[in-house]
Length: 452
Image (cartoon, rainbow, N blue to C red; front, side, top):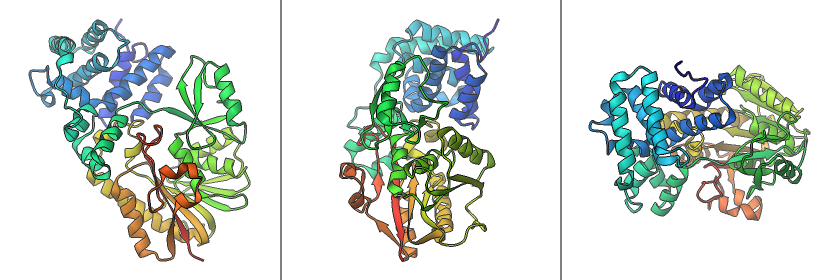
């Protein structure tokens, strides 16, 4: 019987990659396929590794394949190219998969998918790659542009953006980090437990974990065991990167305040704000889509956050149900290009362009213009994005402040813990990078205060 996506991890990965190539989001499709599959834990992890690994290292894989394929890769039938990429990724990156298994399984999958005319091509290219992989002419690190493009798997436009932001040595280190898998970081829910107790629970369950470098409630899973993470149903934790956890701390929210989370879904930062105020702040969470607003409610219920109200609203328009200058604190975690989380959403490097960044910057400015009038005199607005592009960060904030003298930029480096100093720029905005800050995602944040 031919294998199906429910019983073959490689075919499942192939089907997911095909759907991502058609425009789907990798994480959404992966979750859907795995939820419906009959795969065991080991095979589920292989599917996840193959999907994210191929997408993350697509530039590297294609460079290697191009050395052994007699025709340009872009001339191949797309389905055949994805099969080659699956096989090549296993040969290049997965030491635990024997070379003969990587080749034979890909050839067999080609047959199962009824691409009989391509079986010889797939077999020949992968066997040539296996024999010659030690001699692939990888660009050396000192040739920074081709190194970022082919070794670190960054498209040309992204390579240019990285080099604009960082000197060559750091650009290379950052690019190398973007080519790796991200850490699994959790925010311990202080409404239910504390970090020390949760670290002990993780150890008892067979997981190895350490405290995060900056935030007091973060833990990073170093080695995951076979058992589920403890406390999921009980709401002991929220999966959340350390950079994301930082954002609620930067807002300086206090009990008794009126707080707006302007683009709140899926709710990790919203529920963190509730935890920091021990459910004693009045928090309104907005999102454009009803289903995403429901996710906030579901997360709040699991984590025991009782002070959050949600509403669906598109903030390109002024919310007619909110009076001006209502909020003491506003968190605007704006929709962005996501360049800082490409390790988690690796398809983003291949389906975005500089034009997308310009469009997003216009949307970010529009939303910022909408929510700014809702800040009280003396109140604070934190603008944050999980990206590092200039147009979505410094350029946008500088332009906004030039047009709005009623707001000033606060220097976060002067008011946050001294141990966080390396996170902040000279003018006081936050810029986190994985190569600098213990592997956390690349975020930007600026805190604006409305004058009295």
